[in-house]
Image (cartoon, rainbow, N blue to C red):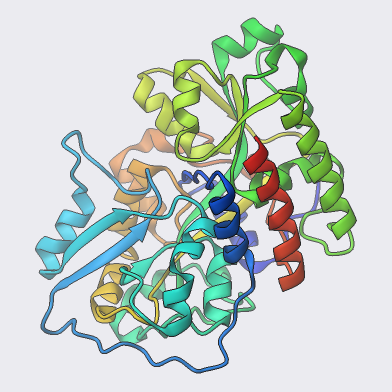
Amino acid sequence: MNKPLPQDPMMLELIKMARRHQMTRRTALAGAGASALALALAACAPGGNNTKLTPAKDVSATDKSLVWHNWSLYMDEDDKGHYPTLERFTKESGIKVEYKIEIDDNDTYYGKVKDQLLQGKDIGADVACPTEWMAARWVNNGYVQKLDEANIPNKANLAPAYLGASFDPNRDYTMPYQGIIGGLTYNKKAYKEATGKDAPTSVADLWDPALKGRVGVLSEMRDTIGIILMSQGIDITDPNSLTSDAFMNAIDFFKGKVEDGQVARIKGNSYSEDLNNGDTIAAIAWSGDTVQLNLSAGEEKYGFVVPDSGSTISADLFLVPMGATHKANAEALINYYYDPKNAAELAAWVNYVTPVVGAKEEAMKIDPTLAENQLIFPSEEFMANTKSFRSLTGKEELSFSKAFQEILLGA
């Protein structure tokens, strides 16, 4: 656990903040079939726009509404299916929010909206939360409206180290929503019965013959292959280490595990169902999902570990697409969730790393025992071996994603 911390300022701050802020998030299912491959490859293409797009007319002053596209299990929810913090936002602001779980995978979501983005048309959302690397593509291609800081005074609560991202150094176009950590989730009882061990400690433990056909992985390339790469001694932050050859070697290794039946499921949204019904015993997964699984089970049924070779860390970002017609309303929403009290309430429900300074103190008022859970407030030791997948060139993006998608389609 003595490896150096990532040097990317955002990731460095996530690691520093992790012991005092919450974390988790669910990713999702990539498509299947020939049409899905076409969609995925279109999504992976770097894109680009030679024509400068014009922001859509903002009708926020006369239409107090907005549509928000987000991931599943990424919002506080009560037993009746209501979203308490969103309902309070509507009550306080008068802005009605249509919250839609539309992002089930970065590439497939981009594939669905890329044509509208290219033309600056409405994608059906006023605000969305893709992952950092995908958000960078949107910003670099000119698909995103510049945020008005006057409408987001709580931006002052953004942890300073979140500034400095190469594609948006001052966070003029994006604002962090939550941070996410990948690792190994396992059914404690089933894992011990199958392997005789209390818990996995390494990625190699997933390849135990006793787990054949009962291992799952995420459909998000940077996490599944990133974790495998780290187990092979590759520094995923370093272009000199994470080369094309290194990546393809990991792809070949992963393909072998799929073809021989060791890995039986490559999923996103539904991987928790496989853990619940016992089809999967161990999986490359998101830490916070383990919290959600245990809450649903009513006991500490599942464990989560950062493998000894290291794990992945990233973040999802608020952004306003160029064709969005309720920009000021979206900015009011972002400002609302940058209030430490609201950020703390959200974190207490969804268990994610929060970028909001002061949220820890507010969260402690909600439930002091939260600080004892390593998956919610992990220690520096717990977090010291996490890294972010480096930025890819357009050529790498296309070839890496194509290789991964081909395995998904053949699984």
